[in-house]
Length: 151
Image 1 (cartoon, one colour):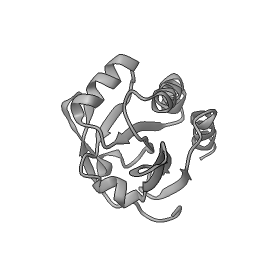
Image 2 (spheres, helix red, strand yellow):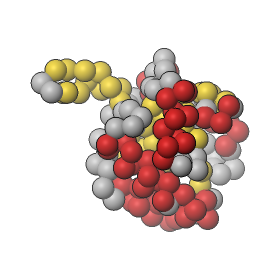
Image 3 (cartoon, rainbow, N blue to C red):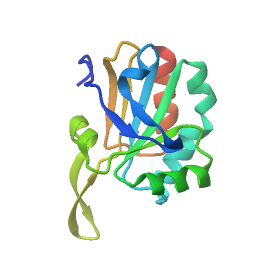
Image 4 (cartoon, one colour):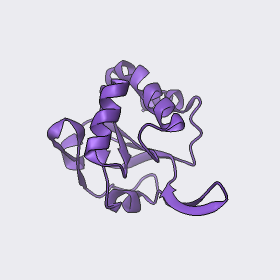
C-alpha cells in the first residue's frame, strides 16, 4: 500500500553479494517481481529495464529484479541478457509474501502458484511511493521511468 514504510529485507544477489533494502536508503529503488528467468515475457521486461537503466540512474533510481529462481539461474540470465542491475533470489518466497505477489494462476488449464508480475517504487526514505500489480510488459518500464522522473 503506497505511503507505508517498507520492512527491511535481505536476499542473495547476483554478483556474489547480499542485497539489503536498508543499504538503499537515500535513493529511489525500483523492485520488479517477475515469474521466471529465461521466459519470453520476463526476458522482454528485463531488457526493457536494461535499455532504460542509464535513464533510471540519471533520475537517481536503482533497479533490482526478484524471482524465486536460484542464484545460479539468475547469474546465467543476467549474463546472457547483459543486465546492468542485480537479480535477487527469493527461493523461499519470504519477500514475495511480504509484497503480496504470490498468486494462484492458470497455466494451461491448471492452477499453479506463482509470482504475479508486479513493480514497486520505494522512495529514498524507505516509503512505498507506487505499486503496479498484474503488469502487462509492453510499455511498463517506460511508465515506471516516467513515474520515477516525476518524484
